[in-house]
Length: 237
Image (cartoon, rainbow, N blue to C red; front, side, top):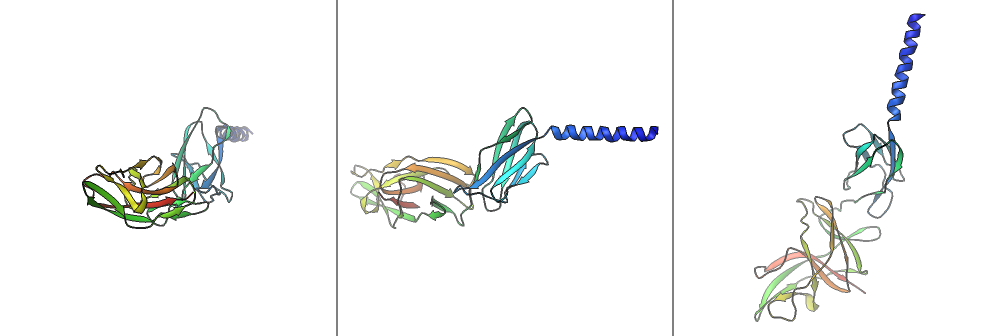
């Protein structure tokens, strides 16, 4: 009888410990979407440096356990960018977080206009510099990609080497002329955009532009620049 009583106490104590352990866990709920705002399923979600894991369902929804403190969640799926977010909580609770956006990698490197449901590769164009009087003029050789909106979101992706954020956006004059260095009435003119790093080899470029032709080039043109290649597009009214 004494032995049985001791066994019951042991089982009861184990149950109390297990309940106490579970009670120390909260739940984080959220949703994973792709770059177009659609639900993304089969995304692996993990609390970094713990055993807590989850997978997003067909609606992109997930629930994952956590302990109070600084919780770092990683989101990964083959063919998509990886994201890590941090959640700081001081107590156990069930909480929701904002949707997490994972961008799908394009099939090859380049700059892409983000359309409603797909990426469109912006045409590449090379340029040559030529002396005209005392000026150095930069002339493009190819035709631009046509874009029928002013507010642009561009996916900038490099497959093999880390992406260099330092691409400069130039305004293009008539006859595919980028502009000139010297006393010409056609100076090289740059336009502002906003760069958002997503990962080491992919980023977003956001710009609102007037109708006209534009050219992205890595770096700035100077008197030593004689040729180069970049992304060429035209914004239509």
